Image (cartoon, rainbow, N blue to C red; front, side, top):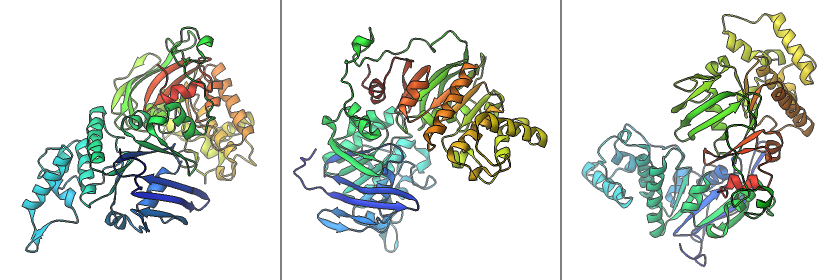
Length: 521
């Protein structure tokens, strides 16, 4: 790594970007030096993607400066950014699978001879470029014949083909397995040795510490700070990403309170629950490439199981795969002891098995804002019954009236459009939607996000009451005190896999951060 006395090849200062009603970036900044891998970290919504789009000419900032090699630049498009020496490889490989490898590398910039494409030269140069990245393949074959890791290398080769001084990799490992990640990292190390400035964007803590020289942390659209990777512990990084106090307990501080615990004071739970209740649902090796490593999980009857981890850690991905909202690549599901060779194919199968799901995206995946409270409330019941068996209007009205009263939903009428209700009352309607199906298991993904304190308390009171009555709850929340307070058992998610299981009382607000950071044994 080049010493920081070297001038940065690229520096962003005071970047400010707003969208209608949203301040995406505020005084954000970034410095990239030649011959280093610089990782950009932050939770979803921290502003990472917006900052990259400003840098690559997709967005124009309201104010701020971008200086490259001592000269202020104003990229107005991705093409202009490329011409300035800034190339980007995105999470989804943005190439043409039907074209050959060589054509993908040179598309739009084909070498020509006598006015025609010089195929021989193009293939020779493509092979030479891939050889620099330690990739030896037949460049005349269609790109679709090669695995995703090789396609990533082709995308990097294309980015380098424009004489890039800065290479931006936006979540490049999200769809790669461990061997493919190591191949990519070997390439990045070689490019670093050649003096390339590399900006690496990822959610994975392990990968951050495996490849990074320096880290910039973003939070709420601002640059929280810039740190040498070797001088920033995992726990400190997590604290900075979520805005927790920096006075976290040092490893081992709580050992006296937890006899027999590991060096961090965390005691992994033994077994699958905190009581002797029967297992309601068990998933085995449930996973999806790029979303979730194969995961085993069990939920007992009447248990509230909390999922804790950073945004992007795999919490929501697990919930969606479990409910059949996303298609799993592997694994099986067992409900009430009945085994299934495969996960649920779709949400209807999950609903039929007695599972309800409140999505974290209330506006787009939950409430249909133009429909009434009554119509929103009976949607899940109607989906289970099928479109040919309409629920009688009188029954709909009865259900809606009862749940509005029971949950204290503030609405002028059950026929009021749900879009005119407050966020907390909308969330109560969605909770009622699934309660009306009398589920055995309720998956609640961020059920209290964006609602006022009073509504949060009321919803969590209902949730704990349901558990006492025998319903099982899978509870996901970014508010760690909420998860700690409510959960009978907690599973820690990190880097899109389950990394630890703890009983109520095993963790506190300090040690849970250590577990999330991976500083537990």
